[in-house]
Image (cartoon, rainbow, N blue to C red; front, side):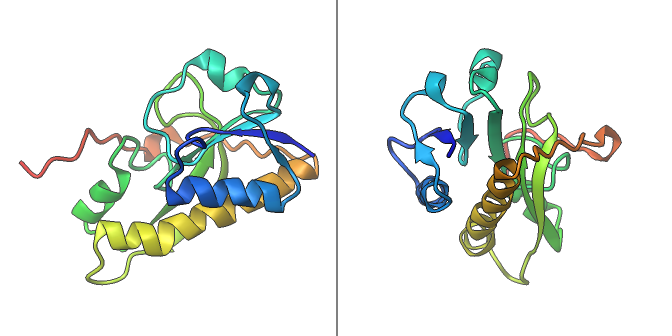
Length: 166
């Protein structure tokens, strides 16, 4: 049984709450202390983590990003995918490092964008459930002793600034 710290767990948005419930369903214990955690997860990160915080848990920290990294690095990944009129995008759990949305990939899932869908509707319909599914897969592998780390292919990456319609 792993002790898992969930960033944002004290005031959970739906994705944070669902990920915390998944941790418990898989038989792990939620811990309120980062220093006592075997693993930390960040389902909805709104700030850049310090490297010291990233490496504090014994296994490390997993961060969720709503794109197929290394594509659409940055805070408004879904809005940029819609702006580019992409018919698919996806989700990624990755092991952060000192960069922003860099670090090895743990788990990904490709998601189709439905015609006429808004970014908010896409997030609720596809992204949140995919976050939970891929976290379940990542934690299952970790339970089996396999910590998946696939390097990002930098030449396929994009970085977008904060999205603005102006």
